[in-house]
Image (cartoon, rainbow, N blue to C red; front, side):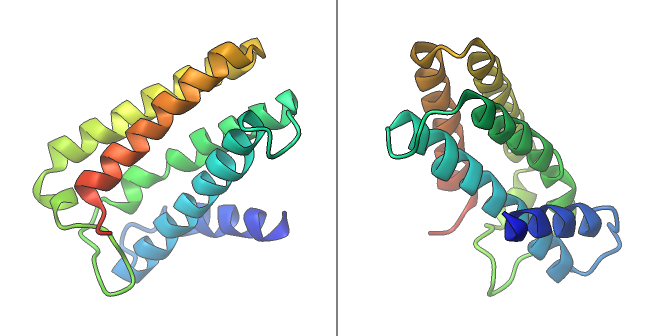
Length: 146
């Protein structure tokens, strides 16, 4: 858990300095995405698939973390920052309206997932988790190199 906490702290400290170098922005968003992946796939999806014990309180923590960390991403993409160590496509900056729409949709679906998790009903959590996952895939398809 300590590496996860370190990544959160690193991401939150790197973001406010928008005058930061592109490398700093890349590092911040990659750290944020690692946390989102961990909470989404390794916690939420694993619980729903029975690969991890279902723990509603831990699910709530996971969704809260995704929401918090996801909130820093707009600033991490505010300045064009591409390079050999990132899979961010130039379309992020050449199609800012489309990228913003994808980010808003992700936020909405994570909000719906949060509401489903609050119910504790697996029949609501499963579809909300799938819908949120589809927004991730859609953004990856359009704005991330393979």
